[in-house]
Length: 261
Image (cartoon, rainbow, N blue to C red; front, side, top):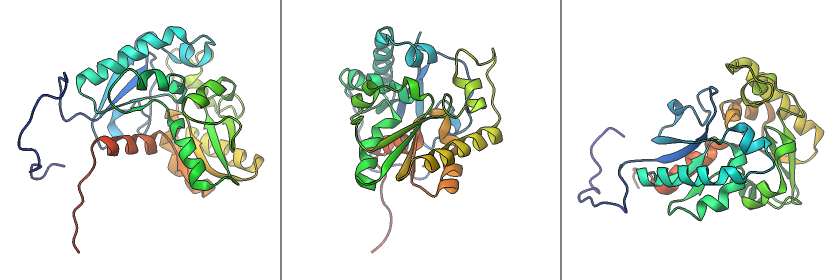
């Protein structure tokens, strides 16, 4: 990363109307104040590539997830996407899996690849594990994950998936403190070890209750920090925002290969 310059870069030219260069992922975040541990999409410190944030003004957890009418979210989301593209970001992502609702809208409004939801990985996972096993989707709140969310990222709601809600079905208290707009404190807070224990409990109980789960999909941005612990506890393939963002960056900034024959 910090060694010799890339000898393939000898001549530079303005790319479209981008203002910045060497950019990585542009990530739109909710207009909401709550902290994230390293690994959470809204915590920039753990990513090994450049990220650029843009707040979707007026789009918070309540308006995106809880409100049945999501129409007011559309214009601020499109504006954030275009701003990130104008800045020079090579791909656009978001911080909440429920942005799946707007995957098609955003992909149709910009000229860079768009990864609006971790759930985009589900059709791929289905191919990987085969039709006899289920993809276990662990989302924040099951009651708010609609068929529209699924369909807009290419998931057949009647296919081999099972869904669990960490907040509503399994009541992960520290997740409620961060992401439940009706019950969280004025200054949202969480404890890492407690959150990890709650995440493991949720995933293990979920797997025990649904026979045939062959892989886990952690929908929520805040679940990513605990993905490795969940994998140790379940011995299953685990997909998350982290696996999606790593993939997204590799698509737009492919690494070189060094070796020998």
